[in-house]
Image 1 (cartoon, helix red, strand yellow):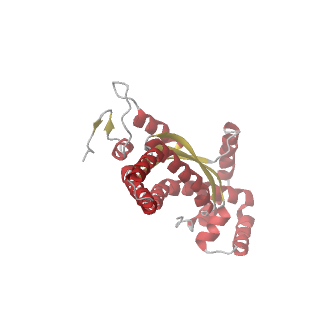
Image 2 (cartoon, helix red, strand yellow):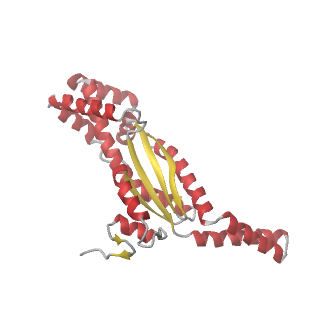
Image 3 (tube, rainbow, N blue to C red):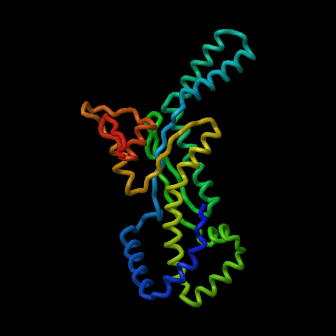
Amino acid sequence: MFFFLLSLIALAVAIGAVGACYYIGKAIIDDRKKNQKGDKYIVKFYINMVVKNKKEIIKDEIKKTIQGKKARRKTNFASKMATKMVHKAVSKEAFNEELVQEVAEALKDDFAEENIAAVGYVVYTQELYSVIGVDVKAVDVKGILCKELGLGSSLYDAIMGMVHKCFGKEFVEYALATQMLEIVTAEIVANVGPEIVSDLAEEGVDVDVVVKSAADQAPFFYALTKPDSEGKIEPITSWRMQAVHNGQWQGKTFKAPSK
């Protein structure tokens, strides 16, 4: 996932050649800490997800339930009851709420495998559209580098010990953490969506995902859920979400992309 992390140590050393950068960087970080006092995350982003094949899933579940009922009771009554129960159990809202909750809860373990401490939580649901917030709380620089570079813990410590002696431990760790955070953030935004789509596809659920940074989520969400001139909110479909994402949605009309 982080295939170009090999350059991080070299980058830290190169930056270290200019000592003034340390004091500037430290001042910026200290200022951020003052302004963000109380925050318990270092990066926040949002996963916007639309389920595309809910009807097909319902039909499949109805078929399975009916077949199971018929195997035990060969009556039309059993079939009708099974159909009614499944329709009730997998209404748009109930189906989506259960699915998005499972996705949000699974993110913690998924990120932990990449040496990233993060939590996911449900922010918003409307029929088959949902928003999951993700707070990245910590990035294990050593864990990521050892994994990607194939280094043992002792070898990593030995290498970093030499770098620390040359440029100072505090600055090197700051430089690595800063660059690592930027890389990790970019990789998350680029890869989380496709990974969720792939994982859910294996379970028979077809979804579309758009990932937004904290800064970009607000205008995106506003455009996506903005009522029309009649005060109605159009159903949020996959193509509409992509149209807003690509800047092609204009109220109730779709603007073709310019060539």
